[in-house]
Length: 395
Image (cartoon, rainbow, N blue to C red):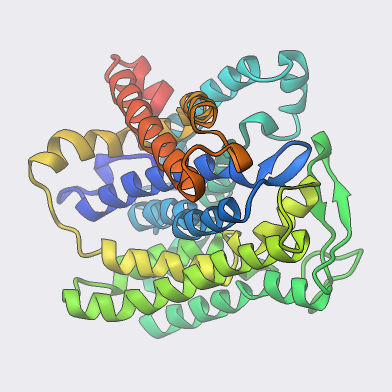
């Protein structure tokens, strides 16, 4: 999400700016949807309509984080300058704003003393979206090691590794199937549930590093950004649609369909339902970033967005400033979104008290996402204009 004009001496990659802004809005859609299946003591769905709408909006928007990773990879990988300079630039652009917002959230939510103690081991769980930065830094640590290979890799070789990675996106689904959909739950710091993994291909209680461990997760999106940079040029609209539409339909069906199926199997179709947080985590199995549906949706969106070349007045005056401030927008948006979410939930109600019937959930989700996005984007752009301090806050 961070920007660096030096990475593109011949001019900006306009479509990447569109990717950043669209992905930011998708993040806000995801967080605006969460109250419709997470609440109470853990998981909570008050009506069948709310479960269906949650599945629809999550399926359409959960590719947001992979899009950010692809954008960073497209611009940064392989490295354009020495390793030391790369880390210095990333520290200024990524780590300093992250530290600022970590402190803000530590004081804003929960008990500050406990929050700062927990920061020694992990991010503040009340600001759960900050997990993204840890993952991104992990990819940055890999980039210098892989850059010499990335500069020389051929198209077929890269396609082979992408296919291997694509297979790993089936592993969470294979685990779910092999375990009968009932994984044992363990609890980490703050009581956050984590499924005990069903062991596959070399994994055991004493070894988490199975044969596909090093090729799974966000590593594939790093390679995907490299592939688009080196080997995907402009396509005709007809060709882009022929490729993208089947991928998007399949991706949305896998993510949203799997999510809704899990809700219905847990609730037995009886609503309202309130359950444990562990059940909500299980519902999200097909929505995770390392699963097949999200990967297919990401590729489909990239194929379509790659065609964007519009750099007119709207791009220059509105979209480009938001793109430059997108990292700060991501870091700070939860302060604004939580306020709008509470406001609209209070206005329109939920479940049996929903004032707009089956249309209540989509209206609330879209209003929360749009209003939060506009306000957060405006704040991010204005704060970033503050001399010197602005970029330290917003990246």
